[in-house]
Length: 170
Image (cartoon, rainbow, N blue to C red; front, side, top):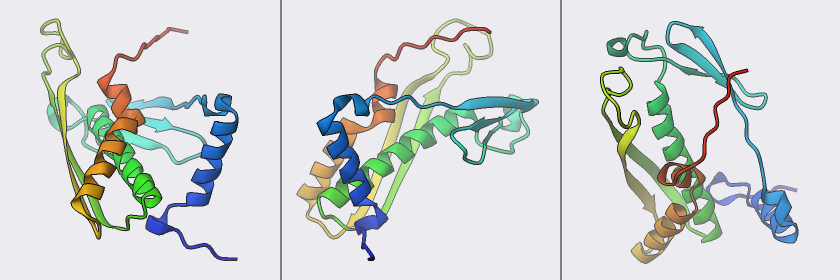
């Protein structure tokens, strides 16, 4: 038996997950993990599940060797990827066939705190994204899709809300 998926989304698998969480909300409580290893200099790798490691590095101007995106670039990539997944999933549910989907992201960051030259916010002061969707759908449907994705993005919610962080030394 072959099944055709709109937008290459395995909708039956997603639907089964939705049904399972509706039947037992405790199944919606999940924990995700990653292990990061120093590779020398400012190079690191992050491993999640049994997947290939993801490399991190810094550009030469920040003392790195420019072999991979740096952590804040990967954070922007994580937000963009989460949004793209949200658009693909919700477009599929709405019956919208996506032709092209791109998100351009940028974040403003002042290096003074990171470099120890002052106190304040070492992270992004703002993040912006421009979403470009090409689909055979009315603009109202695309706008509704956009609102739904923004309202349900896990990474977007992590970045726009205060998340308690506990970092312990073992």
